[in-house]
Image (tube, rainbow over all chains, first blue to last red; front, side, top):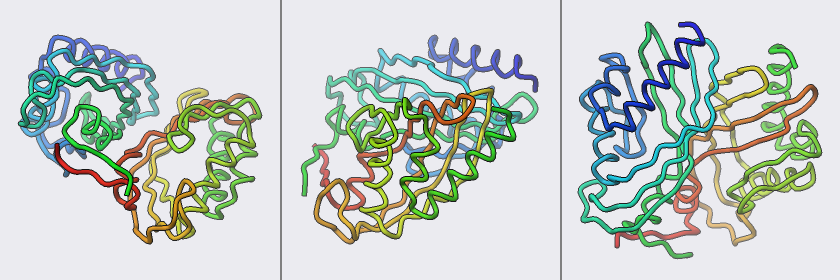
Length: 141
Length: 141
């Protein structure tokens, strides 16, 4: 893929996130794409499983804001930095809604082939997110 | 810097990390470099402050190993992924040693100028790290 094609792909991904279009988001992933997911606590494979991850975010945080900041492209790999923010009014990960907001930086590492993502890895402070939204309580030992 | 020069810079970065040489790592940054550091509680500027950030890791985890993975280069912007492992036998962040191990994925975002790193931002599960090494305890709410 050319750099311009990859930039366009990420613009289309952003538009799909903003309209909560999980079908379009997963269509950008190869059928056997693997995503290393802190949310799932494991590597998930395939569009259906990856779609469920996005639904978890969109359902838990109906006001989810996904703000892209930086896109680094190097041949068939890309990294995107975003800031995620939202409020837990929908119930995150099947838990009752807490009504609490969160904000955190997330960095994504992608591998691309034939105009699709074949490997995806988001990295972020998942434990900090759970504390921010009030699903976990933390105290110094 | 050319791509080859950036590759060489990050080769030096990896060797300095393997040697736990905080001064050498800091020397790869401009003295005006800004690092957004979860361990420092925010942004720090300059080689001295940046060396202290690296030193916090090497002191807290004398067996620290950084296994470097993907290096993405896009003009003056760089992403470096790594898996960081270690054991808290030295005392992390000035706290008493817990003797507990950790393992976390990390992704660094860098900007370079003609000579050095001018911006650095590591993204990782900082709270999860504190839980793994036992300086923070969490429980479901």
